[in-house]
Amino acid sequence: MGKATFTYEESGYFLRVRLSGDIDHHSAVAVRSGIDTLLYRVRPRRLYLDLSGVDFMDSSGLGLIMGRYALMKEIGGDVVVSDPSVGVERVLKLAGLERVVRIERKAAANSSQPGKPLQDKPRARKTRKEVCK
Image (cartoon, rainbow, N blue to C red):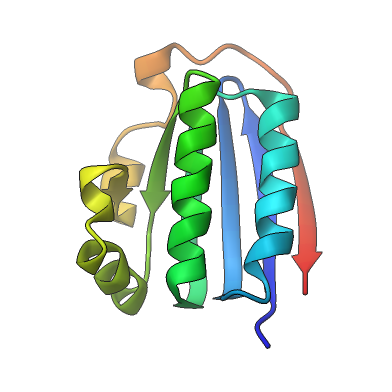
């Protein structure tokens, strides 16, 4: 049974969610629920899913990403997946996810500040950690 945690950071029009651990059918439900709650509360224009801490992801992880993509489209935003490990990136590409969401590597993500294209409005940063079993 997998265990996943996530932390998040709100900044203007953006919500960055950093996932870590294993995302499988056991952990995806709780992670999905936590992220959805944040999305409805914050209503960001862009959701960054930072997968740098994800060790394993199966089709439930793909479903998690695609479901957040659909939800972001509903509220008028988009999704960027950042820093997947080599193994996770392979799963994303085999599934054809790069045709739907943008996948960024750390070098690309650090070269421009997230938010410039959307004219980030000032808002206090909030950070919180969630543990999902």
